[in-house]
Length: 221
Image 1: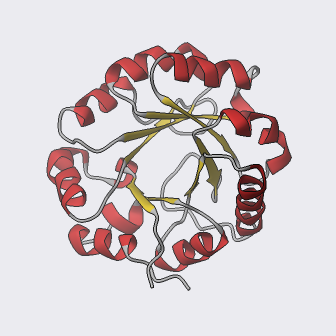
Image 2: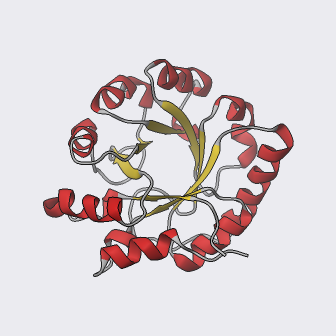
């Protein structure tokens, strides 16, 4: 059987010269969201996209835009990203001095609020924020670059988060990002993940259509 989950291909791995074409392909082959990795060269050692990319994507797809801010002081830029068309905005616990306030700003700006933690960050650091979250992103690689190897220790973290969600009757979605392919996707889905971010496993393949369909129909159970 296939689990009921959402697939969010990451345009970090797409060919920017063929962005409209490739986003159109995944939209037709099972993608539920489009994931946008925003990096500033400070919080993570890489520089990628800004609000301009979100605006461009909003013009070429009807899918929700899942914007992951891997930046310092993310609260300074939330209005720019929501104006550009972000539907979900996820901020790092490690980058937010006032996490609750930042999540409230996201909601006030009309987007859904997400919180994320790096592989070495304890799940306990975000438990106070869970009642306010629409999305919780568990990083399964250290953020900054695509194509990294999955860190298997995060599977236990996903399972614990899923149990907390059930016990407290929270409504957030559990998302996982980093080294996700069919094999690791099956592991995290079995643990309780509900949204898979896949970059190289979709856009990095020669047949994007087939890769997207395969990632959307991972057998679990």
